[in-house]
Amino acid sequence: MSADNPLLASGVLTAEGGSVTLSEEFEEAVEEYLSRFDGHTEAEFADAIEERVGDEVAVEPFAALGEKDPRTVAELCALADRLGADDAKANGNPVQLLPSLRLFRDDDVRTDGVPRSFVPVPATQLPELLRIYSPALVYAWLDDSESCDLAKRDLEAVFEEPQEVMPFAVYGPDYREFLEREYSLTAGPAVLFTRDGEVEARLYGAHGPGTIETELERHRR
Image (tube, rainbow, N blue to C red; front, top):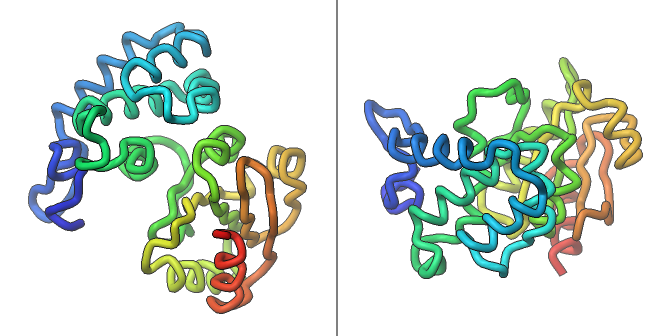
């Protein structure tokens, strides 16, 4: 990770001994917000988000996500404090930088099989995340599948450079019923191209980088 990365420059992350971790100060700030948010309602989360980050963010889905995962809102508020909410453009957009903090969580979200540059998330949080981040792409994968290995390789090749699309990944077997009910997803590997929370296109199996790039170009318009 580059030394001029805003998360390193602002002290959110620290690099020591060749590894990058959340700084102790940032973790303490997140824990302080978590304590403050204990028992919060969706309306109270909305007030906290507007106060710390401003009303230009997608407050409603963030507040709804707070009831499922208060840590996300705690990290958002602590991140805005660190970056300086009034100077976000200079120091980095806290909303856009927020997903990368999930990579440092010690939770049970499956990470094996996630392509580089993709953010592993619980599928149950997708309804809110895909409204906050638009357009977005969701990669759903399975175990021990040659098609998944090929799809992962193709996605890593395409996303070697930023694509102006937020890339999420979910482990399908852990959320089979949810993915089928919410996104009519019954097989994998699959790539969903979404806008404003709605699926605009989908690819099943491995199609090669060219097909993904073509669909991304259409999706970014």
